[in-house]
Length: 86
Picture 1 (cartoon, rainbow, N blue to C red):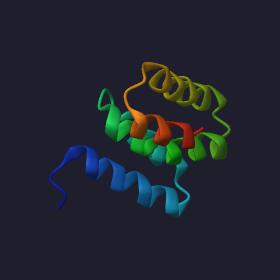
Picture 2 (cartoon, rainbow, N blue to C red):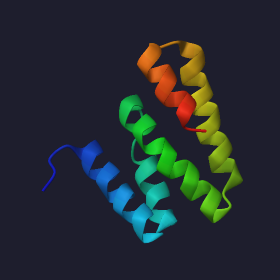
Picture 3 (cartoon, one colour):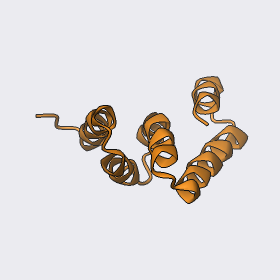
Picture 4 (cartoon, rainbow, N blue to C red):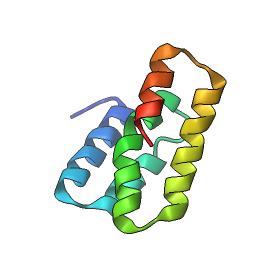
C-alpha cells in the first residue's frame, strides 16, 4: 500500500527486525542503494542485524559509510543522526 519504494523497504525492514528476521533486514538495507537519506534511516536496524547475525564485514561497511557522511559535513542534522548510528 505504500507507494514510495524506499519507505516500503524501510517498513519491511522494521517489521522484519521486530520479528527477529535479521536476514530480511539486511536485504532491505542493501535495497537502499544510493538514496543516502533512506540508507541512513535504515542503518540502526542494519547495524543491529549485522551484529545479530555475526556479519562483521557488514558492520564495518555500515560504520565506514556513516563515518564518510560525518567527514562530508552534510549539515548538523545529518551529522547528529549519523553519529547516533554506530
